Amino acid sequence: MNTGIIILAAGNSSRLGRPKQLLKFKDKTLIELTIDAALKTPFKPIVVVLGAFADRIQEKLSAEIQFIINERWQEGMASGIAAGLAEILKHSPELENIMIAVSDQPFINAKVLLELQEKQFSTKKGIIASRYAQTTGTPALFNKKYFPQLLSLTGNNGAKSMLKLHDNDVETVAFALGNIDIDTENDYHNLIHN
Image (cartoon, rainbow, N blue to C red; front, side):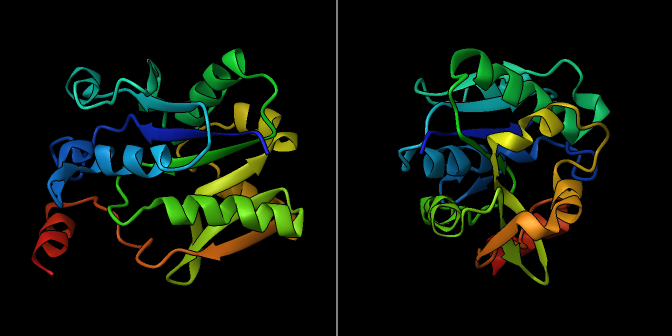
């Protein structure tokens, strides 16, 4: 299966007041942890979508990683998904699937990404999402039949709306600790002190 990965890292961390992508956990920044998980899979290409703090985050990116700057990052997560997907398809129009990951889930790992692909292979469903804390979310895999919809998303709801819209074509994989993401100083404090 031909699968690429988009890592969303364009937000301005408004509730935190500093770039959460650069917070340290286990001797790496959150963006590095996400990229490491992606690089430990066979999925290519991997594109990181930057926006706010692009210059500072860029310095932390591995040479193996493509990145783009989404000039419209203030419009919300949807614009980052569309920008990342458009960039990936420009270079790899033959992609069958795309995975969307965010850069503030400190417990993301390659196993979860690989399980998304395995579940898609075994169920033939068009959307495979991660399941945690009574919800579904990222990382998530979308088949190419959903690329036009992903490219036309608007606002800040990201691709989550598509999970509800196409719930008969959605399967999930368990992502232990996927519910832990960093939005505030309190979230970060709890992460490093627990």
